[in-house]
Amino acid sequence: MKKLLIQTNNLCKTYFNDGEQVHANRNINLRIYEKEFTVIMGSSGSGKSTLLYLLSGLDDLTSGGIKFKDREIKGMSEKEKAQFRRRNMGFVFQEIHLVSNLSLLENVVIPGYLAQDDKEQVDRLAEQLLSKLGLQKEMNRMPAQVSGGQKQRCAIAKAVINNPELVFADEPTGALNSSQAEEVMNILLELNQEGQTILMVTHNMKVASWANRVVFLQDGRLAGELDISDYSRDNMLERERAVFSFLSKKGW
Ligand SMILES: Nc1ncnc2c1ncn2[C@@H]1O[C@H](COP(=O)(O)OP(=O)(O)O)[C@@H](O)[C@H]1O
Ligand SMILES: [Mg+2]
Image (cartoon, rainbow, N blue to C red; front, side):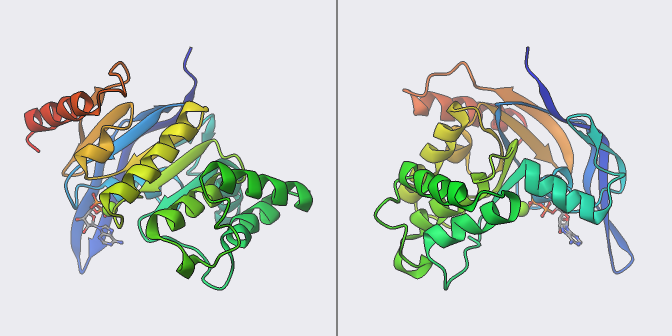
């Protein structure tokens, strides 16, 4: 049986801009199960990033609730949330956050040192991870000395060094060209096939077709869901067509 990782209950987020209300997320009821690779799609401003920030506890919700496993996120203090995130979550963003005067290896090792006691073990793990992500030769280079795709792969290594329950990715391919985007998607897929749960935001249909499940947001509401886990990955075009047809029906 699939294990439930995240469950939201009528999740709402309202921003107040100069006295004007923006309903960024409206009554969202979403479940994320372990080992899933879910994509959140929707046009710009539909509330995708807001949802990701709420689910990860990076931002506070306005009403409703979020449970991560059996814990309600709402009741936690900032300190508890930070610790909870460090233990359970990894993050990958469109703007790649690497420290520019540290090597790729050093960048990956830092979050490991913060969360794990055995530093030598972290060093070994970081080297293994970077090699697995195709950065064996580059790991001692500085971020400025590698390509955008390589930087993003390093950021993924950094996100998974503490073996998180869930990896959040907000437009991880948004700043990459198509071959670099494919490199990054290949890696996310490989991690998912090893059991890593992934929740990714994208507005790119081609990128979305790599996932197993597409959740569509429209005007802050959850407007539909598509399961494409039964489609073969040997025929990516067929997967893209399925996503396209689903989104067209939803008025994309
Ligand atoms: N910090 C903020 N303050 C005020 N309004 C915001 C803030 N963040 C997002 N919004 C608004 O909330 C809506 C949803 O934004 P967002 O979640 O970033 O959408 P998406 O990621 O789908 O492009 C938009 O109308 C946006 O302008
Ligand atoms: Mg966004």
